Image (cartoon, rainbow, N blue to C red):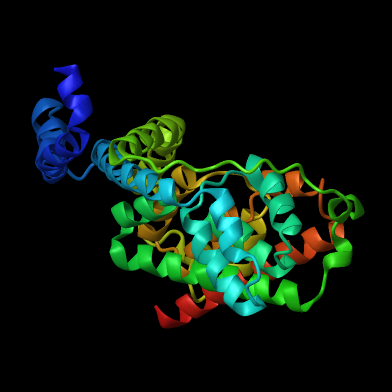
Length: 342
């Protein structure tokens, strides 16, 4: 039986999809049955609303995350960091910024890989601004953020986040490139010639790619599930106990200073998408404006403090400050635009 499954992984994956759909569409009636029938909680109570929110949102987000991470895990087998670097070599500035930002979405990335990728890009002669477009897009527009936004807010907000994230990554990288800030890269970076071992990439079978998708689920979902539960727990508390429109006076669109303040608060914070997005959803439900909430979320996810600390090993403080300032300014502009439009 095990050997049969190993040989027909694609068929098993396809047959699993209807089960996933059945679970997903059953979440609301199951939650209703658990909260009101099994637990016999009274309706329209603060505690009941908080518990209902938590029981419904946790499995919904985890189901969405599992499906998307599996798909992205397969897609990423076609986009190794080495292929990304090769694709960007020799590209002019603006075209390079666009390509780097798009490749940042599908290329595996974490804060710990920032320096190896940066050194590899510099060694290949990729312009500094193009490199920064990649470094901005990769952590900001990741599958966890997109899945959570889709699950909690809908596809329109998820698309909005991806689009504005790309605009910020492309624009910030282009500005950094135009400022000619190469002199603020540590001197030793340009002197080294990183040892490169050309590894011949073998053509993977689709069964192998499915294995990579399963590995991605174990890796990503295995790491972030606790943050998802904690974030949704905080969001449930806000959802159940914070009065309606309470946040309007602090994060509402009529408060002009709410966007820059949310970015200033978000920049030094360290959280991932799994922890911050459920909280943002609850804040929106209590009167926070979309532009201010998006600005806060982008500053927390896109301007990762650990990443900036790690990059200090290869960049001088002036370039790090310019990077953080330009990205923060882009986020603030996006926040104001969406507060104006919505």
